[in-house]
Length: 131
Image (cartoon, rainbow, N blue to C red; front, side, top):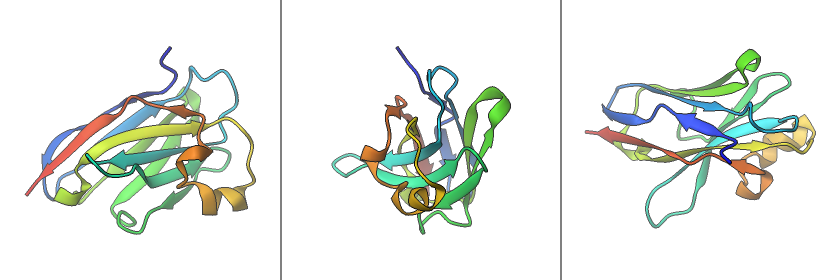
């Protein structure tokens, strides 16, 4: 059963934009925070951005800060990743992830990038940026 539905990947040229979406309405419990990770072949899956659902606070890895924006629409239980000024090194499979176990905001800020913090994962959407 698919509980996270990610979409929005594609191919763009460097400098372009894409917006990823991830709907979490099928998760049967309260979601406390969500994140986007990315992975390239042969490498580990790395955190890109995360959002604390209660207040919409975002956290980012340094390589995307200022270019990517994570946001949410709580009414439709969807999280977005707006990716601007894309670079070839942003090319990867992007995965959304969700956590349905409570964690304090101040702990989330330092731990959001850890894969084992998340209970649910989307199927992945490919982002390809050409130079």
